[in-house]
Image 1 (cartoon, rainbow, N blue to C red):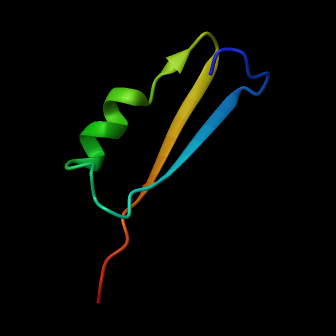
Image 2: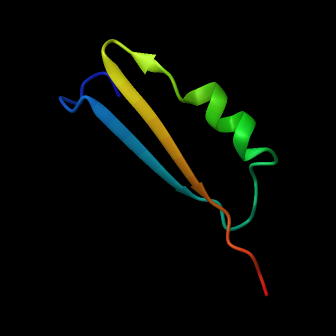
Length: 49
């Protein structure tokens, strides 16, 4: 993450098996400002209809 030249870094996580129990808590822990970079995490957990 530190070596990317972009100021905003986005991670898209496709959690098909729903391994992440609490997506809000997961994002809070890993989204942070690091050396003038903003890290954003987008988690997609599909719903079976």
